Amino acid sequence: MVPGASTSSPIALRLANDLKEAADAAIAVIQAVEPLLWNQVPAPGVWAIGKDAEHVSEAAIYHQWIVRLTIGEKVSSRRPAIERRSLTTSLTPAEAIDRLAERTEQGLRLITGLTDEQLQLVTRPPRAQSQRLTATIERVLIEHYDLHRRIIEAKRGARASD
Amino acid sequence: MIDPARGAPEGTPLPVLFLYTRDQCHLCDEARDLLALLLAERAEARKPVPRLVERDIDKDDDWLRSYFETVPVVELGDRRVELAVSVSKLRRLFAEVLDGEPAATADTSA
Image 1: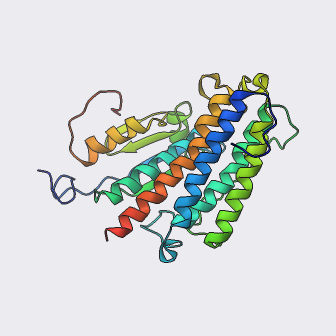
Image 2: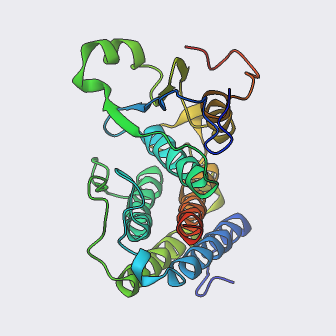
Image 3: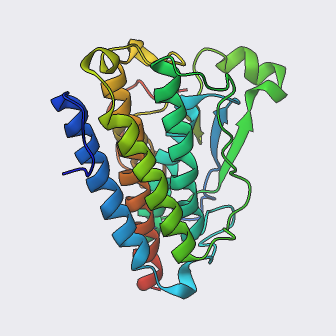
């Protein structure tokens, strides 16, 4: 159960629980990364595992911006930037995990406060097939943790069999 | 002939994997992440991993004209996937172009 959940919307609670599970799983995988692999670029142009970890926390801000924009909160009209050029991170594993946990908590607070009406809003900026906020939270916010967890697992697996 | 060690046709250079994107494109973010996953999975499975090159369509008039309505577009060899946010379609593209599997459908043809 998500701590501090106060919404009456069971959908919001379910989404928050799914987000927490996805984040916990991602953090567990990040915690298990061998120190030598953290900033090792697996191939030319490919992010190091640490960069994937940093990216998930960076993207969380962008994804929360989508939710805030959709529900009409006053936010910048320009989406938060995501740095993609650097292949490595300046964060230590502990720093990356702390940042990810903190931003996940922000996301949980945001989601648990959503009403059923807000969850039915059409996502902004517009997405394919006029996606509702519930679907965006599932497909974008939650899936992003899962996707990068799988990427990190695959990168670890590739190095383990070297 | 397929080289069993690498999966790609023997003696054939690996095609470059192109991803056509534009700034502020959320579907492009999804495509980028899916490609990262598929490439990492291929590396883990010891399959040939093509080099990924991203192209911003706003930097070339031809790309902009061609892909304005269909970014993200993924191109591999002579095959193309438009609005490329389906992991199964991209997986299929990789299998057909890089692993020599027979084409299943015509919807990824360039």
